[in-house]
Image 1 (tube, rainbow, N blue to C red):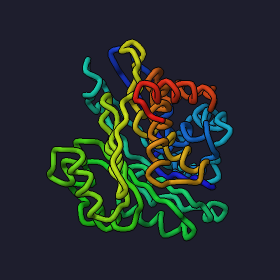
Image 2 (tube, rainbow, N blue to C red):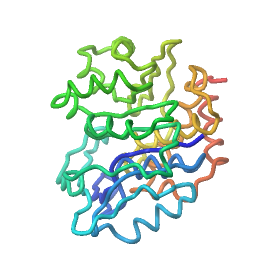
Image 3 (cartoon, rainbow, N blue to C red):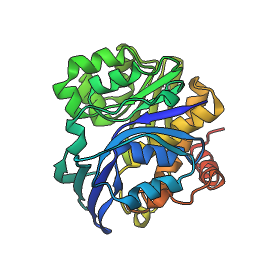
Image 4 (cartoon, rainbow, N blue to C red):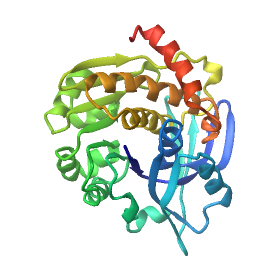
Length: 304
């Protein structure tokens, strides 16, 4: 089954209590593709400028399952760049700068060789861009989207129209509350189901994630990492999505039980991302190493 993602590729500058990193690879699509490729091939659609470092492309190419045929490098354009500083409580961060670059231009098109994709992930971007991407994938079987508070606030109508078209949504707990006006994540998830999706996954950071599905509800804790292992939270949510969707794509199943199992694969994939800056925590990872942590998490959470 073919898995495709569209989203940002960026150049990140990050400061955390554990240190810092300048001009490292970032962006939602980069994290998702690198994370998902550990289990299954991932087709990536995105755009960068001519300032995108050669070593960033080389790093993505080192993840052998990442197909970059949908990557556009645009002459005369600038790559999306972002800077962030995490406080001692790394659930809180401050954006130090944002340079939109190619994100202010027309989104990339899906190449003909990708149009038969069946499993689709819409990483965070404007809902109208996400919707236009869907229109180019007539054979999709499962579509899952991410969003953020900005679009809930300024593109609410377009977001609601998109929610009626997709199968699943990933959202964090504060965004779920903003979208529904409901604090309780289970009740907020039920409200989101009323908007069209068949399931919603509400991410709760260090407190794990909640799956609210038309066929049931499930909870998974975060992987039990020591504080000393949390170096950089950037991209953890996108890595979670990549690990989860890759499990679904390689097994070919997306019912309630499959999604419940996929939560563990997303969680442990994100746990590796947290341990280094940028994509470094995912380099060299194998499915067998992921499985080791999945088994530990299943035992801790008593998941069969």
